[in-house]
Length: 294
Image (cartoon, rainbow, N blue to C red; front, side, top):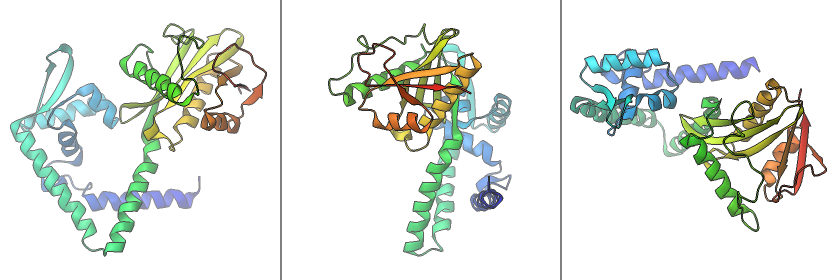
């Protein structure tokens, strides 16, 4: 990477940290570091499971436990077992915690207003537009990829979204029972895998693999949420799938796709997939691709 680019990002980070008061262990003048105040805000009025909190913020379990313990000592947070599942721990704000969150909201608005106050209308518009663009461009660095249980609620949600989009985009709709199978058993090791992409803990995409011993592996169920498109998620899902297939012993990866999925076809071609003769009887396929893995 270009050292000048790296230096610009570091300079930007320092300016933002100074501007929002992140360097002060009394963030927004409230007598606690920024991490504690952020947790108060994230827990919110409804409370949240600790697992969700960890995933959303990418926090280490030990750090989260220490920070919540500090907030409990301050009387702002209560951590208890979930009433529906004693194995699940849940954080909620006390009455004092809700009042503190409201004050943090007020002070955060004041900081934002302080950034805008010295600027004229044109400068404010430029700053807001630039911030929106920077926020979106920073999101790819927050996306995480992991192999997940294909029977989980999030995995099934991704697959359902994938089916719904195919049904909307294909000329004659889409019926999963007519398509070649890729059920949960086929997507569980050692027969296959399902990789889920997450942004702040929320599932935003998936891709699946089916293994066939020494024969080429199959790429299946590739989907990206409409809100996450344009962030390179599809390309990275493809790279994750290729890396896992290679680690699992596959030498060649194959896929079939429909002519309606022009974006996917373009991605496959840019990624080194070569169109080949039909190798399956997939009812919805118009194109067949394969790639030798290295």
